[in-house]
Length: 134
Image 1 (cartoon, one colour):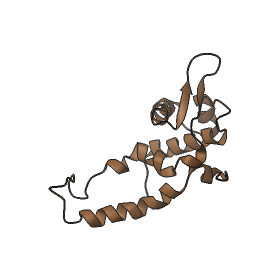
Image 2 (cartoon, one colour):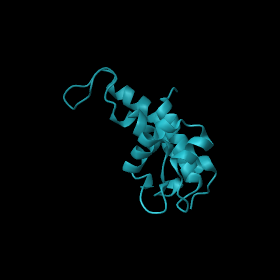
Image 3 (cartoon, one colour):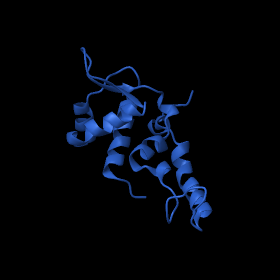
Image 4 (cartoon, helix red, strand yellow):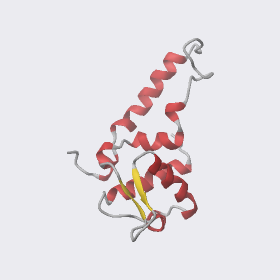
């Protein structure tokens, strides 16, 4: 599968923040330096991860940066990928689907999508990091 560069960076950033759990606030600069992600990509990526409730951003006070909001074993790899790839918002294969008008391949395409995404939905960020599920 081919993924957008932004998606790859988002997964990499989410995994890096998840490594440190909820205890430590991580700066965008640290993520850029440790993971080789261009700093210019990070504000948009981290903002989106925060809007979706995966991480929390801290901009005031003594701590500035990001940390996990939810446990890494609660967040599927699909959750992060879908945020940036928009898979769950894709309609039918040949045209946007609605109840009245579906393309002839609609049911087959839906099943193909479900089978493609199943592994990404099963794998959690914690699994990728070797964190045992509780």
